[in-house]
Amino acid sequence: MSPRSWLAQASQVSSERCHAALRLTLSCLIMTLLFLSLQIPFLAVAIIVVFYVTQKNVVLTAGIGLGFIVVALFALGGMLLIIKYTYDYPLIRLVASLFLFFWAMFFMRVLGKLGLAFFVVALVLIYAQTFPSMTGESEIIVRLILWLWMSMVVAIGVTVLVNACFIQAYPHYQFAQQVADLYEQAADRLQPTQSLKGQAGTLIAEHLSQIQTLLTLASLTNSDFQKNKESWRSLSNMAIRCVELSESYRLNPEKNDPTHATMLAHYFRQLAERTRQRQLSPPSSLTIVARDPLLVEMTRLCHCLTDGQSIAAPPGEIDKPPLMAPDAWRNPVYLQFALKTLLASLLCYLFYTATAWQGVHTIMLSCVIVAQQGLGATYQKAGLRIVGAFAAAVAAVGCMVFIQPHLDTIVGLLLMCLPIFALSAWLAAGSERIAYAGIQLGFTFALLFLSGFSPMSNLTELRDRMIGIVLGVVIASIIYLYLWPDSDAPRLRENIARLYRQVARYLAHPSQQATPLPIYDSLQQATALATRLRAEPLASTTHPYQEAARWPINQSLALAQQLALLTTGYRYYADNEDPFLKDTATWLEAYAHYLAHGGEYPVQTIAAPTAHNPYAPALEQALCCLTAFHTTQEVRDGA
Image (cartoon, rainbow, N blue to C red; front, side, top):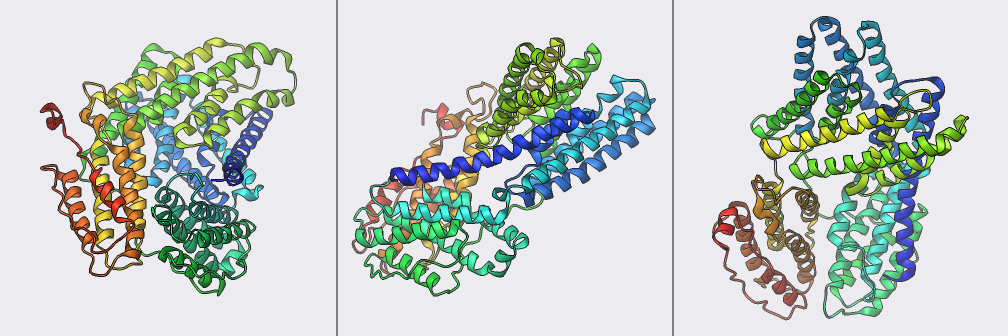
């Protein structure tokens, strides 16, 4: 990538993150001003609601916010009923709350994206258990519950209003930026001297589902997109196709037609600039007569766009995740997950009540917050929670000791909180590996330093809440590791097997127009599982899949993507009678079966290409690089 292009893309990514961080920071500062000025309690709860409700665009933010309000209303209403009828019977109250908590955690696990609503229910149920221990007055408890719901409503309202003030938060703006980025990537792949940002399969997987969602939302909220929806759809379909074709051209060792490739790259950059400005009129018509089949196909797509023809989406269905896990009522893993979280929360609650230690009420929240699908995700979130909490504690102590004594106005308080909220927002707007640390930094700082309506001066409260966070994380982590450890290793192996099965189907497909979109979707899922698996304590003697540390995961995922892209280029040079791809598909089916079920490693029996094909050597080399995924028994036997 040229320095100018690299700086442009880096600036775009940084700009998107800056705008997201700015929206989060403004929301947090406005919440601080409102809550402290009007003496509304539960500022920390409002801050964490801001972070969870804020989505990539304002439409999703409003939808998630409305869902939060409804779910919180039902959860707190149920809690009020429980307290009303069981206030004088603490054991019955506890049993009823834990029963609801158990099913909230169960549905959080089996309902996918909708599980976030039940995560809120679980948090509310476990947080409300601390109210009866704070006071013996039932009226005060009812007021606390009502104020808790009100704080969430105010936080959601402020968040939606703040996001609505930025054009960068609207779907039509984000759609245009993402499509333009794809055209820039296609242009960079046509330049042989460019260094690239990721592989095409990864880029398509990241953008595909987002672009489809953004186009739907943009057509609902923007009249221009509604009138020209098919034209915008054709523009995005062509961008996805051109990224794939340009990456296949880049992998061609012969690099035919470099002059025409440069002309196409210039055309794509012009198209990217117009798309960023949300202009549908394409650049002037191309006068390219390319010889390379891939460049010919890209030129044909450009002519179709210039002539106003509709460009269909690349063939290939991507499986949409079901609303509920298909094996929700058969697989015991989901019940075990709910039971483990319930046990960890109950142990923390018993410690909290037995010691009468009011300051460590955060111990129970930690058990719910770190409860994630898979052992790796749980440990990753636990580590981020502790790091974020300690950073917040350091910031709170620094503000309390060195800055707070010199302040006497609300403006000074907001200026003091600005750097902490800005840092937490910047981290939360980053990648998933660090985002939760930012959420914890903002939430814990508000919990430690902004929990009252007067200057904080008691370091004991800060110490107690930090102890509660650490104890809760430690107890939950131990239970998740030793009681039914839910490793992502078998799921990852199954996903990689499915990935290679899809690669085999793509190779065996007779049509030249076939595209590997399902492969890229499976690749994204497998990559996410691999990231979570690396966070698992594989070196622990109690881990059931210690052999996963030796699996060639990164190599296998990279080879699957490379095979798909090389196959795309191979098709444009292959004869109809060429048996190479079909034989390769048969062997990959056997390899996928081996990954899924074990057994003997399949022997390669692949015929040579019938004619010269520039992609054949790279395909053969990639196939030779595929290696075995050893099981525990094979590792012990020295395989």
